[in-house]
Image 1 (cartoon, rainbow, N blue to C red):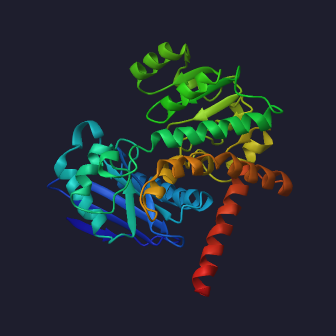
Image 2: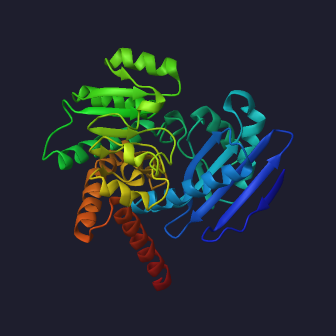
Image 3: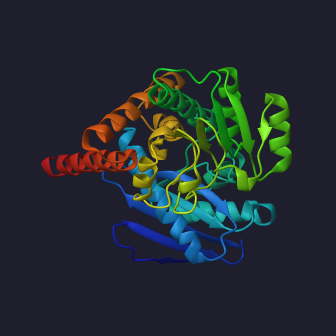
Length: 354
């Protein structure tokens, strides 16, 4: 296996691995370990180039730093991506090679489940490295993080609706979900139980049709999702969907979903604010999964009650961000960014003191 390091400003370590025998071509980015070892999921995606994969892993790992900071997990931010089509390259040999790649960093980066990676895949990775979280409950691990991400997002949506609609509940509100995969589908079911009217879109048409039938939801076409007339837009797929082209077309009062990196840039948060739309910063609202995994790493091991208690604090974290946004006349994205930087600065000062 060939491993090379890429010097990237403001990142502690970025490495690329190529292993022709297993078809592994992967990158790991460690953004910041001020608060603890870098934890972040392992994503598999058919990136068009290594450069595209690098752009994604850098954005995602930085987002994990901020997510872990605001959620007070005691962890840093990292991410790994495997370049390739999950339909064709998944194999035991590939995941074992990925495990050796992770182990090469000696615990600087700890991996977990992410897009196109399952608990079963992680079990293979675990054969080569101990720096893996979110394995099956049977092994004493925290299991699938998706239900906890979904729970936090639904609680967050309730907080946003309450704030944007003068104390109203989600009952009767029209919520558009862009993506109904592992997390989005759980969110859809919980929101339907709360009385919301749903419209959904997913790249997997069959999955969307099945869920729409189950929940009496409307199916939207890709081109119609972001311009749909609704109360809440819940981005639950890939990131960078809020940009110069899409923001002017938005017809919602709230944006709150589980997707990472929803804003193309931090400055796009200003454009959303100018439109009078309440945006729940993604790494605040979708922290339930990382909270659940972080509990596994605490002294005494995994405790579901402790995890759920921490997930239930997500609305309070959002309220703090919303109040800072109002007080300083800045976007909620900028408010979350400032708060995360403050927590990191506090962590650095503690290191110096100790």
